[in-house]
Each structure stands twice: as C-alpha cells, then as structure tokens.
Amino acid sequence: MFFDTHAHYDDEAFDADRAELLPALHEAGVELIVDPGCDEESSRRALALAEEYPFVYAAVGFHPEELKSYTGSLETIRALAAHEKCVAIGEIGLDYYWDDSRKDEQKALFRAQLELALELDKPVIVHDRDAHGDCLEIVSDYPGLRGVFHCYSGSAETARELIKRGWYLGFDGPVTYKNNRRAAEVLAVCPPERLLLETDSPYLSPVPMRGRRNDSRNLRYVADKIGELLGRSGNEIAALAAENGRRLFGIG
Ligand code: NI
Image 1 (cartoon, rainbow, N blue to C red):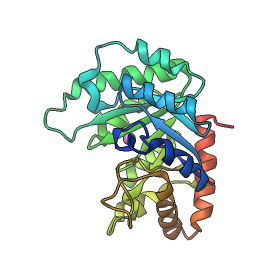
Image 2: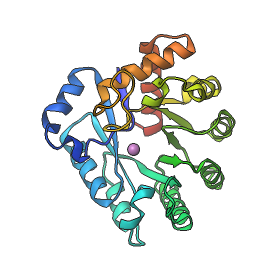
Image 3: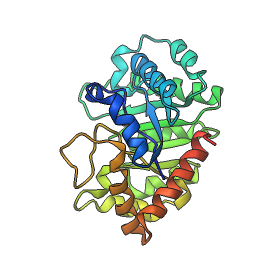
C-alpha cells in the first residue's frame, strides 16, 4: 500500500535496530522503499540494504552537503549505478542553506550527475534547499531528464514550471505542519499523477510524531493530510503515489 520513495535507512540513526525495523515496516504495509545515497559510502550501504531486502531499492550519488567527500570523479558512482537494484541517481542537487556553500562547485557536481543520469537513462532525486531558481535553471538545460524534486519546498509557480517539464514532486512530513499554506498551494497545482510520498527518514517526522525519529510507517500521516487537502482518502493518495513511484523508478 505505501511506497516510501525517500528514506535513509543506511543512516546511523538506524544502527541499533535496523534488522528488526525493516521487516516490521514491510509487515506494517510499507511495500517499497527507495534509499538514496549521499556519498560513495552511503550509496554502497544503500545498495547493501537493497541486496538484503527485496522491497528496498537504492539510489546512488553525491548530496550537495557531501561536496567535501567528492574527489572530482564520478567513476565509483557510475559503477555502483550499474547494480540491478539501483533505480536512480540521487540524492543530488543544490543546498544554499549554509554560508560557505561553495555554490559554483555544487552546481558543477550537480550538472555532472545529471549528465550521468541521462547517459545511464536513470531518473534523478533532487535535493533543493534555498536554491529554487538555480535548480530550475539547471534542470531545464536537460530536457530529456526525468525525476523528482524531493521534499518540494518551492513556490506553486516553480512547481508549475517543473511539472510542465515532466518532473514529479515529493511530499514529506512538513505538509502536516501547522500553517503550511505553501504545501496546499503546491498540491493545488500538482496533478495527482506527479505526486510522490516520502518520509526522508530519519528526518522530518510528521505531526503527531514530530521530534521523534521518523520511519516509513509515518507515511500514512502525510497521505492522510494530502487526502484532506485534496478531498480524497489517505488510502487513495497512498495508492496513486505508489503507482507514480513505480512508474518513475521503473519498478514493476
Ligand atoms: Ni534525503
């Protein structure tokens, strides 16, 4: 029933109980999970989880916050992407939250990974934090590319532009936060067939789980809230989002 298209189960936050937790999630109705890597090491760990659990898939790539561990070559990422359970290049993108964000280097790494995705014919998982204009400009340079703007936080206007270009939008815990008017505005312009559900576990727990470690079981709170905003049931939202995720990531 639920497809969590973005959860970091390779994160150390799950070290203590990962082996019990993952089967429990599946038992609780989480049918599929995509675990995106953030650098070479976590991409490897994500693939190892995908090998261990049939319902887990992986993405590989350098997160903009891991720029420091990028040595100028994507050869390892390219090799990892050949794994049969690697369904995307990600998590990649731009993050301008920090003052010393080395924007030019981030942009170059982002472009290099978008080009790799095009070459390998894989979708991408984009992280865009405080960099909406540059992200839109850059992805617009690669018209054949498909993918998702994970935890979409831009305006409804930018959402429209992305949707026109074929992109999917990912929705997470923040849609449940009080006074999140922007989420409602974005959902109003997002066609149902472009919507994905994600947790970004262990981060971004939805209400009423805020402040606790997140996991994919909490996807139902996000689905219910979106359902409430769109006048549909949470189950309907979960089902159509799961269908969308399978389509984007090519999971039959
Ligand atoms: Ni993430």
